[in-house]
Length: 511
Image (cartoon, rainbow, N blue to C red; front, side):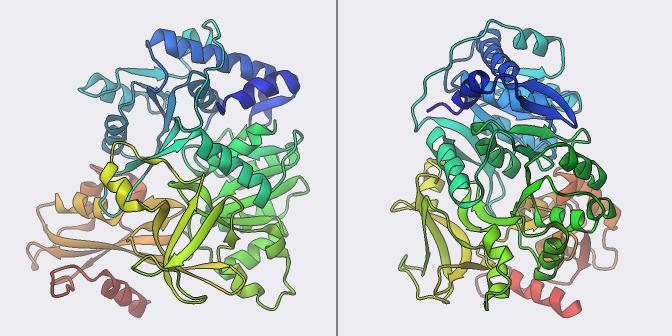
């Protein structure tokens, strides 16, 4: 089933109801959204001679054109490649090249970077800027019928990464995304046409995934005019739009709970806050429950199993009388309806309750594999089980608790940061002989990036401003270290591997 069929159906069934809103203003009804989707699909196919299966990247901040472009791509039988617009230009270039994207839909804010990339020796041959004259021509093209697709056809290349640094494209099929949406109805929330979903987090990641079930049921997608998280704005939008849900990183939930404009506002229209992507401290969660009430639901998932492995339901959050309530609040909940979840040892055998091991998951929501990376796929999906690389334990009731990550991923403000890419950026500086990057618990961001640097000249180590510049030339601003520690040597084992656990222990000892 083509996911864009939801838009086509809602265009008939809920024709005059709002489909997309920018702030408090309706941008498009379902009839208008369906018509524009079919027209943009036709424009993309004709303007750029695209055929089903071609990839179209989307690099823009959250705005109505983003949602129109996404569903138009699917309507045309193409594959969407949503890209985090906050990435460094070189990181975006890698994703465009790796995916073989033919067209990049972007906005005025990112147009100069994207145009420069397309004008270079890249696989992408066109930048389509929205709004703009070419976008208007595409959007006013003759509509085309919905393109038939197979359930196993790729729909979304979700770029994720491991400690090897370079992002890999998780191939999410129409079946994967349909199952993730159905799982939302089963485990998170029912949705009605009177509801709304507020996109304050990037559409390229969790917010976009959780927008799907809302589109399926005819709810309105609301884009903040600020393009981000502003407490006063979000409070006003919650008052404006009934049945409001939104996806947020724990740091975003904490920030909103502490915002006086939110705390003083009428939150009667707030339905659900889905949080995930990083650990949430129990004290922060308790404060959020005080502000928002039992409207929170936690999810645990990965791009490879799109945001769908376990869930800690609103009912769990509300059940304070349960004798293990605090323990459950520190877990990530129960296996979702559409997956099997196990904790296994190094040989792939399930371990007893309360014993730690690697978390593995199986189900129709699990990705088809990594784009053009059969070896990485075979390493990650074994005997039908997705090996998450995360370490956890199941209790006797089936609640999963994350214990550690076998990968050295750092999650800061809900954004994934991979140490190796930061280390490689710093190693370009001539004053850096060796470096190791780790995460440090941070009450505001969840984790902050700390770099342990061995200087080339111990008597004259590089300045932190110079190190920042070395990072900003190659990686996104949010990935640069918040703290630099100069050391004589990095701790290593007998095989010469850096012992990052020792570095984390040093940070804990200093705190």
